[in-house]
Image (tube, rainbow, N blue to C red; front, side):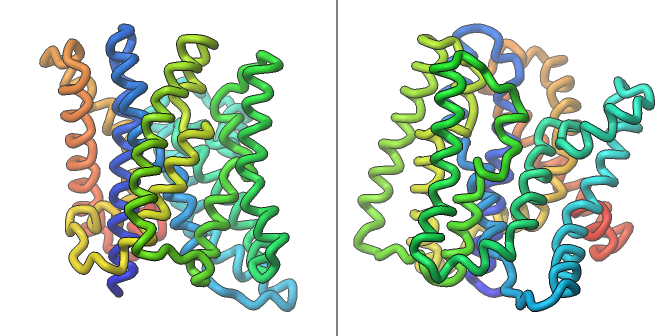
Length: 341
């Protein structure tokens, strides 16, 4: 694997760690103190989904679309890589983890196509929408106007969300506010521009961007507490779909693009996590549930920070162990194709 690929694998590893930490931070945070700590922590790791979307855009392959068969072949290859493992894990989750469906086929169908079998699965539905738009995005990168339009869709979606929640007092619930492609497409398009070398960061600007990133984290914390204390919009305050969170995610991506070529030895641990990231994403929730039961049994529910750290590390370790064993038993090709491992 080339060094530039290792840098993105490490970034994937960092992002999947953030995903696990996000979900672990929501456990036993009912008290005001724990909820406040959880909210502060969330602002540090809310970059997870924007970074994954950006990486997906970066690795969008160049493809010539001249006839219908080109489109069909492209969609078959790209969509099967995520939908086959997704559908198989939906079946496994329904059979062995969630027992509230009672073979209600209409509910199962709706939850599958809207990514509600498990909370994190909305990301798959978003990714499917973005893949369907790739031919349109690929032809837009040479136009400044089209670049501006694609990059402005996410900020405009954010403004619509703020208008709905703060002015109309209509609190759009999860996952509905996160499902439209317009919310995330700017990060995907940013990845496409980066892979075409149309987004370069000069070394002399890195320090300024880092300072802006630190400032954006403080801004995200302030915004989160404002939304919580003034508007009582707790889900909005936690969410990564906020202006300040999108800004910090964007700046983190710029920092990565600026330093990735100057770092020769990326963390081997993060690289392995990056390779296992899709598999961890698909089944870490049941593993987190198991870890939470274990830590709660030992009384860690009274120590939020300790439980967060133990649960997060335990989930990552167990998921990696399971993936390594499954890959060994079934073979890498089978586990990747059907289980996302």
